[in-house]
Structure formats: C-alpha cells, structure tokens
Length: 480
Image (cartoon, rainbow, N blue to C red; front, side, top):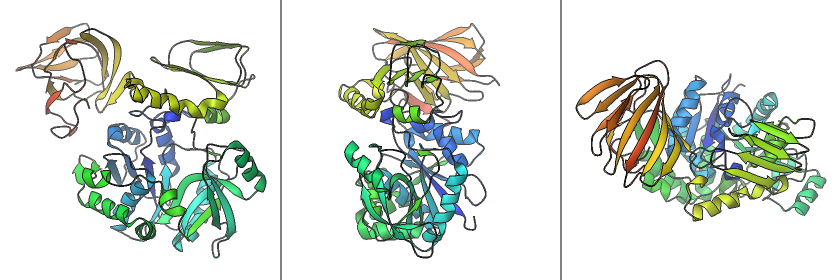
C-alpha cells in the first residue's frame, strides 16, 4: 500500500441486540464472540500491518481501561485514545479523529472502522482498501458495499451507480436505502445493483471536515471546541464534555454520505457481518450435524438449526427448532431466531424498569482486575475481587458500610487506617465503617479475595477516594 492509512477505530456502541452477553458497560466489541480474540482486537489486527499507521481509537470513557488492556495484549499502542463523555454516533467521532489527524496533515487518509464487525476474508478487505485509495486520494468519500447473500432487513443498502473515473473498481453511489422490510429487501437483492452498507469509510481527514462543515457546520464547530478543550488523562485524551455533549447525534451516512456528491462505493466480497443479532452469529458460526451452533456446557437432543450458548451453567435443549438460547449467570434468553432482532426491546424494557441487567453484568471490570457479585440480601452483599499482579485499588473509605476481606488465593497488601500489613491465603481482616483502606496485589500471581459488605447502604457510589493510580481522583465517577 503506497499511502500510509490511518485506521480510526470507532468503539462507542452498546450492542443491545446481543444482550444478555453484550451490555452497556461491557459491549459486544469487547467480547470474544467469534474467535479467541475480542471483536475489537480482531479489528485492530486487520490494520496492524504494512501501510497502516498506529490506530486512533475513539471510545466511551467507561470502556477506556478495558480497551487499553486489550490493545496491550496485542502489543499495539494507539496513536491516540480519545474518550467521548457521551455517545453521539459516528459522524462526530469521525470529525474528532479528522481534526486530530488534520492537525498534522490535512491529506492524511482515514480508514473509519466500527470495532464490532466480522471480516472472514482479510486479504479481500485489504484489497478493497487498496482499490478505494485511488478515489479517496482524489477527494472522494469512499465506503464499501457488500454483495448481499439474501434479503437481510437488518442492514442498509447502497445502489451502485456509474463507474468512478480514474479509480478502477470504484462507483458513484446512486441511492441509499435505510433498513427495508422483507419484501423491499427481496426486491433490492433481485435488482442486482444493490449492496449492503458496511459502515466502513475511507477518506482524507481534511476532505471529510470540508464536507461536514458544508453540511453540518455546527457539528464541526462543537467538535473543534471539544478538541481544543480536551485534556490529557494518563494515556487518554478526554474531550471537553460540554461542547461534545451539545452535538446532534448523527451517523456518517445521515450527516454526510447521503447528501454529498462525492460519495463512492467499492463493491467488496470479504465475508463481512456486523454481527447485529444472535441470528447473525448463528449464520457465521460452526454448526453441528443438526445445524446447531453450540457453545459452552450444552446438551442437545432433537434440537435443530439453533444457537445455544452457555456462559457457565449447564443448558439442556430438547426438541427445539430455530431458536436462540443464551444463559449467563443472571439471565436466560430464549427467542426464535427470526425474532432475534427484537431482543433490544427487552433491554429497553429493563432500562425503563430501572433494572441493572440491561447495562451491568455480575462481573464488573476495573483497571485493577474485576469484581463479581456472588450474593446479596438485606444489609449485606458478597463479592469476589480478582486483583491482577502488581495492581492496587484506590485508597478509599465508605460512609455507610463496613467490609470483611478473606484471602482465597495469593497475597494481599492491606492498608487499614495507619496500618499496612500482608494477608496470606485463608487469612482475613475487618475494615470498619469510615476507615481509610486499600487493597494491593504485590505478587506475581492473581489475588482472589472474598469481600463481605454490611451496612445500611451498599451502592457503588458510597466510595470516597483519596489516592488512585488510575487517575480517578478527584474527577472520576464514584464506583469506577
């Protein structure tokens, strides 16, 4: 690839249609749903070779430590990791990345990639990027169209127009179609000149800003202010919250592509899926002789053409056909495969009811490791703390609860008031209400601690931090 391409990884989505495995605080792009690596990691690896610059990552600030950790596992350092205070869809995220890149080179070519797509043919993907470069260098705003394999109602469609002069394999875009109903999808597929809209884009940074400023000048102005007021926070760039929060949420398609004369599509058969539903995971999954995709501790008998996934507990599926069954430690989902797109309605109902299952798993990741809820009742709850080697929880106190810590494995370094001491396996300590305390893993192996909380209020916002190595004092949210 002659030109250096700057990947921009967009990781702000919640993936509600893959609930209950994907939830707001731990969405699908951070999960290993298709391979041993997470979808984010697979996306970054595709663009980590020759011809690509280190990626710019734009993400929700709630996911910052998870994403940073996953990139470290790949030994890939992003050029920037930009934190959005709130989600505002892809057009503002792309504008922020374009502003940062254009600050060094207005002609820098951006490759905008959602972090939650599956691409089975990586060489086909890279060839499509190479094809699109000629048009992007000439000022076009390039997207990639996927030849449809059937009348999919969960994707938007792009109609291929006349050939784009000077860039073989590129075509003008004649029409965008939003997600159609089934009959319309069938008609589009029969027409032969429509492609699924992949949501991936290739464009020069300055060119994208030029078109966005013509079409949505107020968006560009807010993004400029958000970048100008951004502050460095450890390895992250935290956008100025007030300016960014005032932006109208719009996708790149709505804000720019559907209104510009410079839109170009590269038809590309690359084994693409946006994995937007459990049915999509069934489509691309490895099936047994009965047409089932089975993952985890599962027994089937007389069950066909189904997706059955267990995140721990045994699932027995008997005499079923064309269903999705997903079991986590706190939720069991059962839905017909052809209704899987409607899972988001359950998520919306849970949110309206104020229930936590729409956004939080029982296992909650933190920069030091994770905690997992085990039991809870009136005035008590029990958690398992997993502290990674060399990591430390913040020095903190609580107004409403006391805690007991029992070391299950590893060695704990405990600060309690003015004391600092070590606890080994099968040893415990008591932390009275109102006393400053901290937990650290000084060893080379993970530390596992059972924490028993008791008191009149046990919420995560009853945390007062005094010291924190992850930059969460004093501005970070309680409960991080």
